[in-house]
Every structure is written in C-alpha cells, then in structure tokens.
Image (cartoon, rainbow, N blue to C red; front, side, top):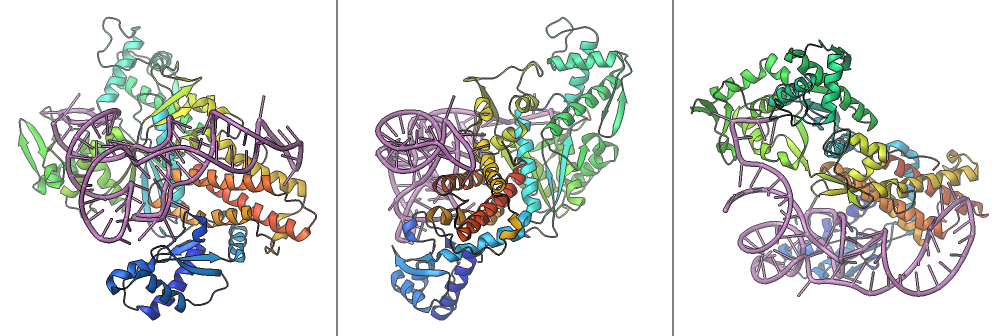
Length: 557
RNA sequence: CUGCCCGUAGCUCAACUGGAUAGAGCACCAGCCUUCUAAGCUGGGGGUUACAGGUUCGAUUCCUGUCGGGCAGGCCA
C-alpha cells in the first residue's frame, strides 16, 4: 500500500524491499505511520508485528531481520527497533527539504490528486424549499457542500453542484395561502388566518410586492405579479420567485454557486414520477391497501413499507425523491453525495430502498449522505433566537453581516458535521489570535509582510540551498507541510472538511511559533534565502488550503 | 417503546480509521517581553476516553449491555 505522503511512500519501498528478502509471500499491509511521540522517530512501521503471527516468530526478532535487509538510503539517519516490535525511522534533516522544493514548484497544484480522474460526482446541497430565507443550518450545509465540491475537484473528480427544490408540494401551497392571507390584510392570529401558515414578516413584504405588481428575477426568468389576491396560481409563482431570488442573494453573499437548480415540478411535467411508479409496479414491489399504493421498502432494509400514492391520488414526497435519484444515476453520475440535516436521516433508507427496487442496476448504497446537525448562535453571551428579517430564526445573511463570509465559512466547517455547533459571533468578529480564522489568515499576511520587507522576487529562491533549514521549528513546519496532500485526500474520502480546518490551524500555529523563534531577514544570505523559501512554501500551502474552504487569504490585515 | 448519531482535560474540540506516554485552543498558574505589524511570547498543572464486560500482542477506535444527550419513527418534507 503506497501513500501519497512523499516520505512515507519512499520508506514503504525500503521496508518492502527488505520484506521481499525475509518473507516474500507474507501478507503485510505496508502502513508507514507517524508516531505521536517524537522520541519514536519521524516514521514507524509495524510490519514485523503483523508478520509475527503468520510466521510464528518473535516480532522483535523479525524487526531485527528487516533492519538487516533494509536498503541504505540518504533519507534515513537512523532506524531502530522499539517497543513490541516497531521499526522507527529517524530521518536526516535533508529528507524534508524536498517538500519545500515540491510545494514551490507545484504552487496552486500542490495537494491536488488524481484519485477521481475521469469520474463524475453530483453533489447536492442546500436544497432549501422556497418558503423562507436561508437559515444558519443552510449555511452549514452550503459551507460543507462547497468545501466538499472543492475537495473532490482537487482529487480530480468532475464535480457537478446541484440545488434541488420542492416547488410542487404541500409546503408551497402553504406558502401561497400565507401570502394570499397577507395580501388580504390579515395577520397571524387574525380570524381567517390559515392554520398552517408561515408567519414571518417576509411574507408580508412579498404580499405587498405582489399587490404592487412587481417583477422579480430568479432562475433565469422573470415573474410579474398579477396583483389579484384571488389568483392563487400567480401568488404561488410570484412568492416562489421572490424567495428563490432572496436565496440567490444569500448564496451570492456566501460565494456559493451551483451548476444547476433542479425543480421538483419538472419531475412531474416530464413524466419521471409516473415512470418511476410504473417501474416499481412492473418490478412487482408494490401493492394496494386502504386505497393507497405501497412500496415494499422493507424488502430492502427499511423498517416499514411506505406509501407512494395517497388515497387522494397524489404522491408522497418520497416518489419524486426516488425519481430524482434515478435521474441522477441516468444522467451519468455513478457517484452522488447528498448533504442534509440529520433530521432527514429517516429518508435515507427509503430512497435507497426505492432505488434498489426499480431494478435498474443502481449501485447498492447509492447515494452517499453527509448529515449535519443544527447550529445555534451565541452573541454577547446569550443565544440569539429572534431575527427581524426572518421572524423566527437567525438567517445566513444575518450571520454574514454580523461577521464576514470568511468567518462564517471557517467556523461552520470547523467541527465534525455530526456534532452540534454553537456559533460564537463575538469570537468570529475578534481581531486577535483567539479567533481561529484570524489566526490562520494572519499567518499568511505575516509571510506576505516579510516578503514585502525583503523586497526581492520569490522566483529567485528556486535555486536556494535549503541545507540551513535544520532548526527544530523548521523541521516541524516542513513535516506539517508534507502531510498536506494526505490531509486533503482523507478529507475528501471521509467527507470531512473539518480535517482541513484543523490542519490549517496547526500549520498556522507551527508557522507563528517559528516566526516568534527565528528572524527570517538575517544577514547570513544563505540562511535568509532558505528561510524565505520555507516561508513561501508555507504561504502556498495556506492559500491552497483556505481556497478549498472558500476562505480568502488576505495579504494585509 | 423502536431505529440512527453522539458521550474524550473545567469549557470548545482533535486523535492519520486497531498502535507506543490520548493531543490542541480557551480558562487557570508562573516567568519573559515590546519584534520582519499586533494587549504579544515561553513554560507548567490538569484524564479511570460516561460506566461494565468482551475480542487480541495492543482498544478512545471493533462487539454486547447499562446510563445520559440529540434526531427521527405521517397517506408532512
């Protein structure tokens, strides 16, 4: 098993060569690891421990045999046996210099991989219904989705970003009824106000615009209000257009873009919903009961069968969901990732069951899901619950206006998606090292400042002799930079952008520590050039990492 | 009641998917200091990884049970 870590890969080759001699046929996964404890060296191999059982030999003796057969390498200063049978490698300082040269030559491409070359992935996220402004939960989803798209693109995948919206269901009818009630001058609580209604002030704004016969642009088309409060169809169209327009503004403020907005209504008009029902029926997976049409999802792991067509003849949301995912598959996306709140986790089994039941050869476990929990907002030591704009919740736009796009993205990506997150507005606004975004961005700005002070051209450092880079802080920093490609690959594979955030905090921390310990612009020209080269490599890595998160890297702060 | 997710320093979170002495940041304590731009820097204390078993050379990680929290369980989405 080779690694994308440049040095792990080379060490694995060395150990592999030794194993060829000792035990050519033994099954060993050549995992080279980074010990937590520095005294255990820079890297270690547990190959001898893996071999102990099949060969029925003492792991330490096996380790000794591996050491004897290990080909000599200039990278390795010392290799020794420790613990139960670990082989620990202590590298020569020069082993790390290659990474600086590599980063500086690859620049923006440093950290990219080709694991997904030639493959297509559709990532669906946000997918908010057009019934209100985007809230902070959508913000988390937008940040996660965009970062994941960037991560996959960096691994060579052809990424398609899609936003699905339900413009055909009960909620839209509720929206239209709410706007209509407002257009007739009613308020929440009045006699005649619909029982199921959206009560936010934004509904009143839409009603006012509707009566004023305004025109709104969204999804590449214009919608003009009829102004007739009895015209529910016009109200529905206009309200959806207004909210889609508002959501577009939210997404623009957050610098998130989509390749496509997929309308649920389209699944009805192009016959996909009917076709899906027909396919499921033809596959013999449906039955009639109590006037409704059911699907035997229990045959595919669901805990109860699900209604497809209600007794009133309309479909449950689950049918267009299945139809939509069949469409994804048929559009050529053999990989699909859906980002949703954990409150939707119940739909996963259903959709997957439906996709298996149609018998179209869709991969088992299609699509993948990334679920995230809710976000709460703290400001001035108190939880913020009310927003004037939304009437009931903190909107994404509020959060961006209170802080910044960079802070919101960085913060929302900083935790594992499945843990609840409390967004601290005051911390996000802080201009000091307590603020993680500031801390990382400032590392970048500091490097830029050093280069400005130096006044030279970074390009002239290409032939710098890196031998002077041997101070402890410099070794730590080079080790950190060498991990970057692996971090990116893991973050993509595990659907875990927070790994990148934590990495960048660590990288910035290593840099600040170095900056505090050593001066870069020293009189010794060779040392100065070597340090500037490392600083430049650090700068490139920070820029690349922040770009994946959709966070800017200012040169001055 | 059932299913899924979670439980790690006082707080917020990590831990390279089974590795060695579980790590950071706040907060706390003690020193230092005004720099290539920072009310900054360096060091230190702090843990039965919720609890009890199991699997093996080795468990925060995998399995079982208990306790605690979140989310679901509709012919709503």
